[in-house]
Image (tube, rainbow, N blue to C red; front, side, top):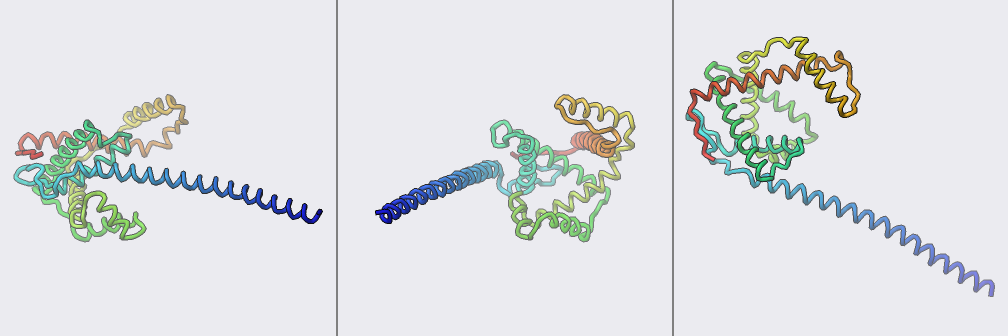
Length: 251
């Protein structure tokens, strides 16, 4: 009888333990399932967003604008648009909304026209870059990716092929040369740095953040001021170039 009772109890315990184990396993499986569902939903949202962003692109061969008889094509537009859309997302904006999409379009066209005018000026003044400089810059960019496949995927996502990318690198380097020599910023004064630091410190205090000493952030502030001044001068130069330019926007 005792043996039978022991067997019965042992069997019952086994059933209970199995049930408990099953419950734990079930909970774990449910947790994994919930996590998988969440990941799938996030992936679907990303893919849906990408489709909406790509829907704003245009035919690569379509003429977007003509600047002094030079065509700006859809391939250039799509690449620049992707950059604008990415910046908007970083700033917390939804580039797929009607208002933001129109803003992205106008900003992209304006940027391309300005860049074209500046490059035309650079060509007039015989600024050039060598294939060696272009390849060196491309190699530096490739180092940011683990494999060539990742690099090519990033190119595709940005709406560019290798030829378009090489052309963009060449234009960027040429424009950099032009800006450095033709649009000098000049020295940044201590007063300007102090003013920017005071604004930075005030903003930090209002958000409860610890504000570093001026000496610790002075190089960054100086660089930021240089970039700001350079952008302002470039914008002024573009506006001057527009006055004598023939610009025909097609979209």
